[in-house]
Image 1: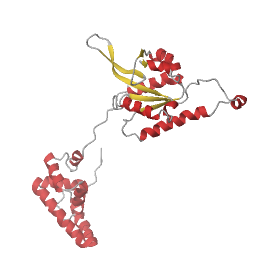
Image 2: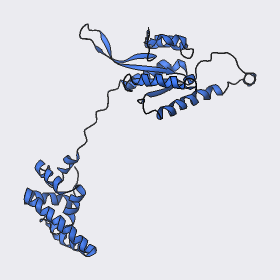
Image 3: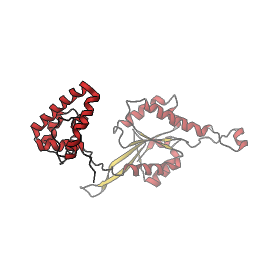
Image 4: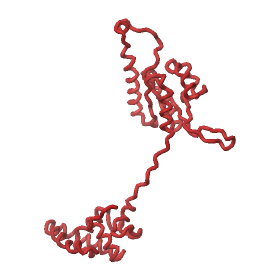
Amino acid sequence: MFATSLRRRSSFAPGIQGLQSSLGLRENNLATHDLEIPINTSPNPRNGNTTPSRRLRVLLLAPSAVSEAKLAETFERVSHFASLTGGEDVAIVFLLHPPQTSNFVSAKHLANGTEDPSTKTEGVYAYSKLQAEMIHRSDIPYVTTLPLSSLEELPALLKRHIAHLSRPPLQQKPAATSFELLQLCTANPPMAQQTAFILSDLFTDLRDLATTCTTVNSAPDSSSPSERAGLSQMSGAFDSSNGLSSQFFEANATSKLKRLRDLVGDQECCDIVDFWKEEWLLE
């Protein structure tokens, strides 16, 4: 549908015929917007006819709409328009170059065989002004604004936008939660849920868990012989370079690992320690 009021607007009245022939729009007394176009349809179970399940509502604006005299009125209309759906399935089409209502051409441009450049820059400036004003209006929901070069391109622009809106949303795979990642931090995955709960209580984060398992020589014996052989040398170097602070850290970390072993048992505790000590290849 298109609003009857378009017939009284010189900037858009010449485009009515194109809307009727290309989009099959019928005239209607629309008060809050200028165009209403079906996005997709679904069958009506009562009579078998297809009815629009979604509609695109469009507001048509020209450069004159953002003049100082009309700016407040324009934004009052935009605010009411956006509130219809909270910004969903609505769009503003801004006509950059309205059709000339006068055939007057200055002598200078007539002699040079050129057009007045102000007619080209005026629309771009007005469009930029609208965008800048919209940024500062936090009370208005975001509305897609589509620039339109000429009125003849309006049906094609609307068809492209409707095709974009009618695409099904991409199905995103749910991302793994931090708790699910924690359950994989064992040499024998997946970790029991109860064990993961215990880890989250004993350690502040994964970094705390990883540091504790890889730097403390008083941790429960690893099930990897190579790791047990090199652990004491690594921890000795750690102690000599950090003094009392490293001793305090190891005492605290050792207490955590002993507590963990008491709660989950030797095997699960060793599996967790091995995970952080060994290098693993993803297949």
